Image (tube, rainbow, N blue to C red; front, side, top):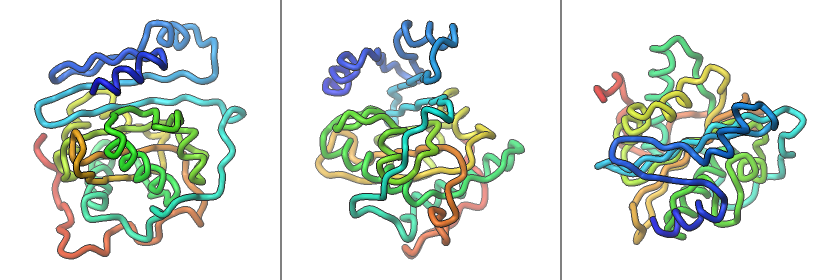
Amino acid sequence: MKRSLDHAARSGRVLVPAQGQTSVVSSSIAMRMLLGAIFLSFGLLTGCGAKGLLGGEIVQRSTSSEPEASAPTGSLAPKFLNCEEARFLVLINMYRAQNGVGPLRVSKSATQAARWHSQDMGEKAYFSHTDSLGRGPWERTAQFGYAGCQGENAAAGNRDAVATFCQWKNSAGHNANMLRSQFQAIGIGQVSVSPSPYGTYWSTPFGSMPAESDRLADEWTDEAPCARPVVLPNC
């Protein structure tokens, strides 16, 4: 946690973990958002609850300032989601349907970026939307091949999809990200790292619809057994 706070201080972001609450970044960023003086504005929300750590970032970017996508890199490109990632996708799309919002499609490159981010947080013992290479969500996902990133949720401390879904559902900012109608795509990265401060890390970048070639053909899992959720949890 100290490293996360140190990193936040260096980047001008103020994180104040509080039991069952979220907090917002520095007033300078908030002022810029209010004045509408810049194309890029963001709110970083963090909270530390009894059952894990969570964070969410809302990114608003003009089309002219979107990063150019690079070819996917690394070894985490998915053919399938793992069991908990697949269960989370079912949960979030059930939740969106319940609230009159369309389903999210899985971007392979955004999922690759999400898995890299979750692995990096565990291995480098930090919790932040800014990774160990200094990249925010939009830069990171673009470098893995997805240029449509518009927001991101992050969590740590729970391995299973239901608990992580409830973490985000019970936080206003993260819940809003899950239900945003302009989001059409998601990357899902759930990675367990041992040893690490929180054990399991989650990252879910959201954004515009990916190209057909970047959509995961089979959005379930090849892991067995893996029970598909049929009802939403009572969070």
